[in-house]
Length: 153
Image: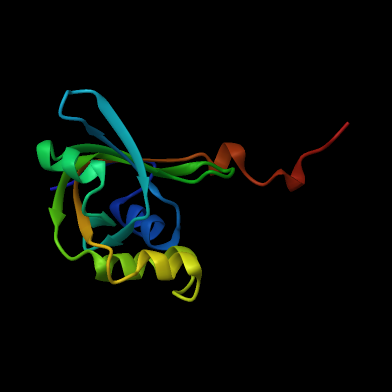
């Protein structure tokens, strides 16, 4: 059960995640206990966040050792808005279907050298499926809104 707090309702959070194409910043722990942060493409599906990455990526090893994570999905342009939270990550084999969807979402299609490289047959991909436990939303639109009304001196 996810605990939603902050500026938005659960429905608002879901709308943001469906309509906004920004990567997730995923925080985890290395086996030595130190912190690790990685940025990945993400999609929202049925209450979970899904990413894809190479099966041999460091973050996969770290998550297998400790599946507890922190995350941030927020805009980089004014007005700043987004979500952050905590949850648990599971690693699932065969990340190609998720990766294909992410390539289409972030690159607008599969007809580019980067898309072809990412989707190459010899790349082994996994899915990182995140079950959010806490989600805190913020939206600074009211205080950082459109500058076009501002007066200049």
